[in-house]
Image (cartoon, rainbow, N blue to C red; front, top):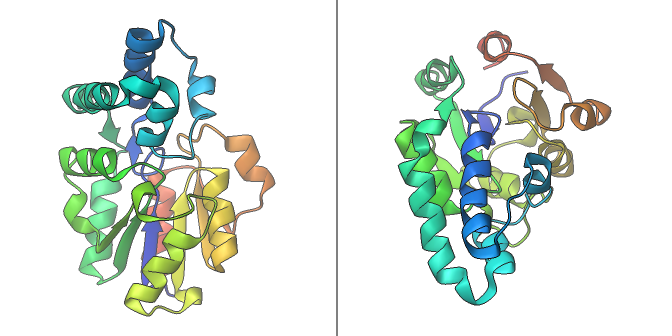
Length: 213
């Protein structure tokens, strides 16, 4: 099994960003709605992009709330980081000429802020965000865009993600799925979906990919 193209989710897969995301949303909900949400309540909003969530939350205040959200997200990005070993993993994959893509439910603005601030943006040959698809994950649309752009065979493509939506999207696209559980907010749900591969550390994933690219 030799993978020629690998697609990564961002949050919980490449980057530890949940604390930043929770703080950013609560900055907005406290300011505009007078309340804060629990992490589980915020996770339950995931699927649509940040812009759509904010629009639904803030109504007429959407434009100003959106600016506040991204300003807070950018200024406080020190709350987020790469998981140890991720940059070395991506560097190794590029040295081996593996095509790399992002497929995330994040909107493009937040995705690019994170990828650039954590200095991994340029490793990716294609970045597909929630703003770039008609149907967000668990739709396979983002995976199919990558496959079609680079004319890849599906048996040579791997999706790497931490959520049930990543598993469902990969299966819908007919590609292998590697579920990573080093920071998954939905570990038990992921395990129930019987991914092709399960990894509990970046090092486990690195060793697997070293033998399969």
